[in-house]
Length: 245
Image (cartoon, rainbow, N blue to C red; front, side, top):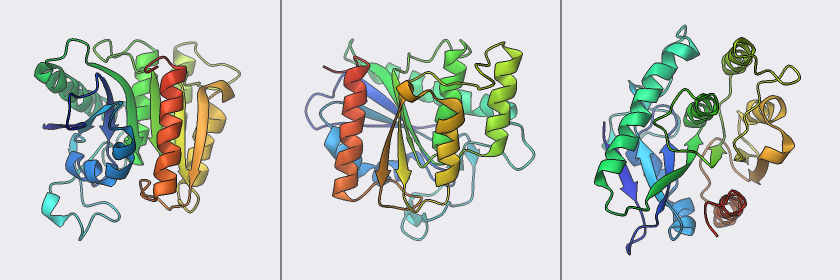
């Protein structure tokens, strides 16, 4: 499963962000979808693009623009598959990408510091944060912060988090709380907006979350103003978590 790494033309930054695409998409396509955002962060981060583990039909907006970049992938299985079952495949895909990236590094200071996902990829990123928080993925470098773009957060995911937290004795005021500082990027016209807001309301404390509202639907930021605002939010979070100075 290929891993795609992009960076500035000079020596790559030593800090890296894992990037998880939306459903019916791919690492190559996501690389293009966030190209304008990457431009504003090119001097601070490498970007590691991971293919989802499951074959999928093309997602919304993928065709015909990206028809030449098939195949397409997703993160969660068909209807009826449990979140737990999907996490086995997700974990394998992310671990393979991390191992591939590490094997290519010549900079001894190079380190994965964060994770970014769009739509279903943001949901997969959320689950990786939860797993790391509970010591279930010891191979995963410590994710200091996260960026969730138009997160697709269904009720099944909320039920899983709450049930898993209860089983671990980790419920706090009846909530399963994610404690990784996270930038939530919302689209004002996104059909998933209310679900993304539920993720913040029920699974984050205010101190661990920041939000950037963009004038867009269920897409990655492309307008210059939106990209600048998101990039500034990422850099602010990176400084607050001591990823960069």
